[in-house]
Amino acid sequence: MAERTIDQHPLAGWDKPDLDLTNAEWRSGTKGRGDVEIAFVEGFIAMRNGTRPHGPSLIFTPAEWGAFVLGAREGEFDLT
Image (cartoon, rainbow, N blue to C red; front, side, top):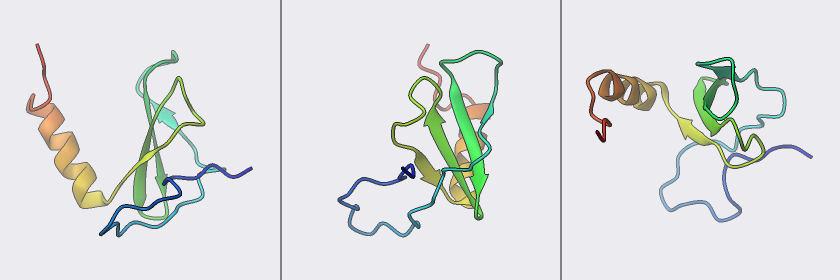
């Protein structure tokens, strides 16, 4: 069964394709499990929870991914 990237009920205004992530090459920042994994597929960036690889994936455009990475580097998401 192919892994789906969006729920059966797409969000209004959703402008991203329903990517087939079956053969995606997932990359992890660490060697262990339990971390975030990303894959580059058809010009988009998919992100998933490494402990739940069959769960949903977030899909980013390159511009969205760039803004996310920049925000993370600048501590925008630091909750401490």
